[in-house]
Length: 297
Length: 333
Image 1 (cartoon, each protein chain N blue to C red):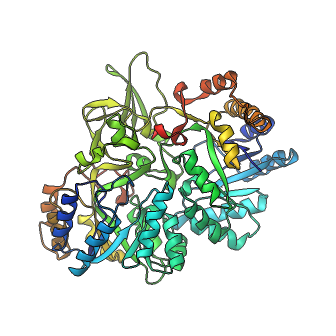
Image 2 (image 1 turned 120 degrees about the vertical axis):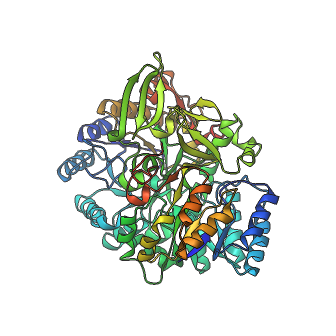
Image 3 (image 1 turned 90 degrees about the horizontal axis):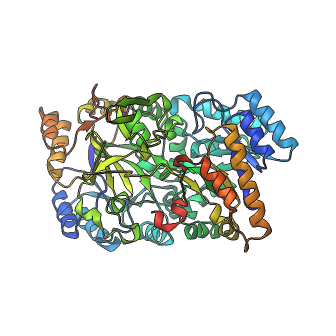
């Protein structure tokens, strides 16, 4: 079981993004997913810039994959998608079925991303037939449901699971960050840049609940499966996806590496640097915001 | 075919109300979690479905079956059983979201007409055409996220009929890509066929006001003069940056009567009315207004103007007594 660095879900300055991936070259992650998968208005790095980062990471010995945009709305979104598929140098993670169509037409292997909604082995088999070599279950998957699916997974299919970070829960045509600032989406003034880990949303009694990240809504709680490594190994999971956060990401990766190596205290070290309350309810078949036996809200 | 009126049937009484008031087709679900309105007391068993089909077909109308949740691995046969049942009953189409289930339907019932559910989250013609090439879908219901020019672009680049939501509850998120409900309650539309399930709702009168909670999470608190609505998670009031407001969406409904001439012009095949969970009286009233409006726009698109009486009637029925054009109208975003 190895580690993957998921696509950056937030909008950071160009310098911050480049510095982040420069550091990532030295982290013990096997694979790095790159590209803008949330909002087409985010343009501080355009596709050629992402491809340049990809080349650098590949030169540093990382496997690289490009993540496609989850919500495709316009012809220009499709143009970007076609350029990603057409580039051909790197593996692509398809995050909606239009990308699956283009990748299977191109005849190249791909990663089936977590928003393709694979809930059963039959759909996974459809994807395998189209060229998927790796897949991620939806983030709401339970351990039991995943075990049941994997009993009949197509031969050779690798499974990667979202194992750490705020959970990407929903996508909308509306931008909730722009809405917060009373700005129209078309003139959002790129306010996401002010919120490198999203904009916290709490209930009226002050309990952290969700995180607004432009058109994406995330959990406030930080999903963390570091305590579940034996179960994940038993299921034959190939890779754990760690989702980027603006601070301490190197230490997050290090904690998972240490846990995989069986070192003590890795979970405690991680708990000290998590940017929000831990949640793991989904894995245990409960409400996503629950943790252990307690509710953080 | 254009602008067929597709109405919700949560029960046999609603089905008849829709047919009697001019629906071209109704859509229904079986009485389990194979559809996205898996609510207690709602939906059809096989005998009721057969009776509904008979009633509709005698009057030259159609019945569509929603099997639009995602089959789970260990209960897969519940979904394939539902497809078998649909074919046996003679459903005019099944509305599916899961590619694995589509493949099953095509292999076993090549003559069964397939529609892509809104839960399939197809927002581009590349995605719509994927389902056509691989499973022969004949119609796609688009998520409520595209503007009308974007919808038009999809229509231009596909041979698949396009169906749009016209009226009713408004999902602000891309359907099929929203897990907020399971994050809060453990059950989502994708996996359990419900959003903000009633069994997780709690109401409590407190000195600060009437509180609505979902699995313990405070969704809203209402003052004396405020009307409390059903606590759908995305329509609560929350605190962001020290401000309390409807951070995601107001409790409002979608109403696209104004857009009918444009929808006709760009070649929309069908308009869907949301609300299988609503009463037969609601279904009757909404169907009646939309029948009149669609007839009017087909007769004279250039001179079409929604009658004030229609809007008043629909506003009375709307959640929060207000309506929006949603994403079809760009400023909403």
